[in-house]
Length: 180
Image (tube, rainbow, N blue to C red; front, side, top):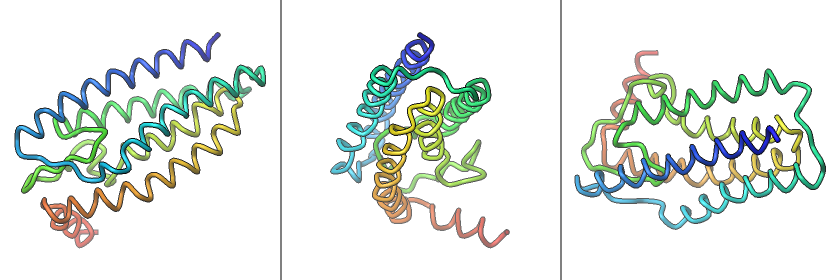
């Protein structure tokens, strides 16, 4: 029963994020933004939808229960969700599920983006591991971790190239490297 409550809450969170992303996309496009990497986007959406489907199927068909480490894993999951919200709030109108580039925009360097380039992708990686392991769905955790790493190996280079070509991305990260 607990898995269904948690999954419903996470799915509602994702639907809220889709609404936020659509609103931000509309604003970004009105400011002159353009999309890159659109060819892989449907695969990413499919991957995330399939993740929830496979998680439910594995838990139901194998009669999985919560992990003995559930309290610890759940606390970690809550911390990851807080990081997700911090990422979204830090990027503000620039946050999106698509790669939208606003030419000549200043790269956001606040919140978790002060410490790393792609904290939102770290959040997704952690979720894809933690959520299934909380319910002993190890097959889902393993397979979707591999699929997500594959997706990010395509997505991140596309995003970084677009940011380097159209924003102050190189300057910001070169400066940070020089200061270290």
